[in-house]
Amino acid sequence: MYLLMGSELDPCYQMIGAALAARGLEWRIVEGPFNDPVRLSWYLDNDRSVSRLVLDDGATITDADISGVMAGNILWMNPEGWQPEDLAYVHTETQAAILGWLWSLRCPVVGRLAADLWYRPQVPIAFWQPLLSRCGLLTPEVLVSNVEHESRAFGERLKEGVVYAPFTSAARYLVEGEADWSGIATMQSYSPVCMAQPHGAAQAVCVVGERIVWEGEPPPESARLEPGLRRFAKGAGLNFVELAVARTSTGMSVVAVEPLPFFGRFGEAARQAIVEALIEVLTAGAGAGRSSAATYIRQGA
Amino acid sequence: MILVCGGLADSVTELVCSRLQSCGYEYRFLDLGVYPSGFQIKWHWQGEHPAGYIATDDWRVDLDELSGVYVRYLGAEGRAPVSNLDSELAMAVYAECDMGLMTLIERLDCAVVNRAAGGMSNHSKPYQALLIRECGLLTPPTLVTNDPEQARGFYDEHNGEIIYKSLSGVRSIVKRMTDDRLARMPLLRNGPAQFQAFIPGNNVRVHSVGHELFATLIDSEAVDYRYARREGHSVEMQPFTLPDAVAEACLKIAGKLDLLFAGIDLKLTPEGEYYCFEVNPSPGFIYYEINSGQPISAALASLLRNGCQSTMPGPHRSRIS
Picture 1 (cartoon, helix red, strand yellow):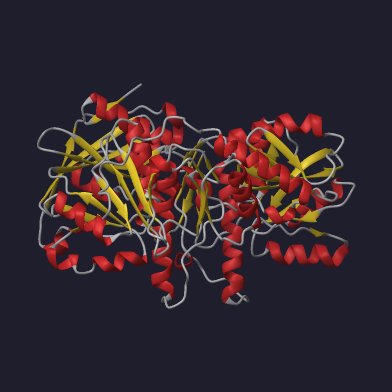
Picture 2 (tube, rainbow over the protein chains, first blue to last red):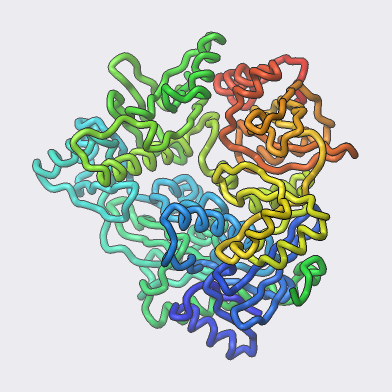
């Protein structure tokens, strides 16, 4: 059984479901493992980790029955009827439980992030800089400062101009003229400001397992970039990751990393390729050592 | 040079500063309550690490001069209000400041106590339990469920000797399950909870500081000794020497989580087994230092000065090289 966690309306899941069915493989979409009426019980001790999932139609599966999981788009509980504080607490508890449970599974899981990414998936590109650098991938030059003359000097040094690149947003603002610099100075009185080398139009690319899927025609530098992209995904522990690359004055650079890829950013051809690659990842563990039958969890309860 | 980042009103940060001072180690304080006001900062990437400086009107530190950084981030309540901004914009400013500073501190090429990434495991106790298991420490029988019937079965199986506590990093008081609390089980359908077999014995709190360990044996009748006095129980603490294998496992888990400083919660059973409940990435160690007399803050100061090569003589330390 393959579990796709998220919405039934998710186009990625619909395509994966169809592809699994075409291979004669059983699959189900589950919004979330703890979303009532679905019930999950996970038992853990020194030697054992076993779980039992009761689906909305009463069907029961154990972890040993699960062949693969797509976990990138889990739907959280419906906020209707909850006090905000209670909802926040239950949400936090559910997130903690799902993270642990996903890591207890021995089957292939796509979208299983390590704790630091699970809780902070939207980190700025600067967060990835050391790993990207180790993988031989360029990133735009940046300078972070709340000292006005330092930022201006950086902007003047970059012949092609400079952009304001906030840490907490993917938006980029080209700094043009004195009025913009004055605005930057005002922001610097509240927070250090990240300025970056500008880049051209970004192109999305996915690493899925060992496969690279470009949105549109791969750039001329793709052969040089792809080994680095694979090393990056492996180093980050991500079997499905989206990046954006763009041209800067110093070469083709990575300008964004998205540990939870957005399927809608890709055209039909790329979507097909992504789904095929995801099927490869999900079915790679078929028959591989999974936990024995969940003897602890009482059957039929 | 050592950089301490935190709030003036935080007693742990205050103790670290005071210990650095008494050890004669030079440090600079970055007051997160007012940051960035009064500070000048500039950094850029030099290969895999940031290069640049942090300065005030009185001092300047180049990032490559730093031997160690101690950081305890503050919530919005610990900060000076941002003038001329409404609360929504102020929150956005805090978020931008924090993200920038966190990115910088995470990637510095020196000892950082602690990098935020390692500490994230503490937001999910069952996730941490899986890592703890891999390091050779025992994990209590645990059930995570939103199924009232399974929870009831677990309770019966352990003859009612179970506790429940939060799954996440939200601080909660560990409580024993009782018959009258069973009536609330149907509420589990709203979301999962964590139940554990009650493990009898004495709590042992281990502070790992780089390669050094300071173990404290806690003698208390309370289920959660942190709240013992509130429940009318006493707490006695004394330095404790761990068996080598347990000490090694503690260092292994701290290393696996990339925590140079950690508070590891163990329980020593009457049979001599050690169970591990949690690894705290930002331990409030003062309580243990005062009550057990162990030089935890001095070891921390030494770590910040010398990086992981830090060594300190001391009678109660287990050291694994």
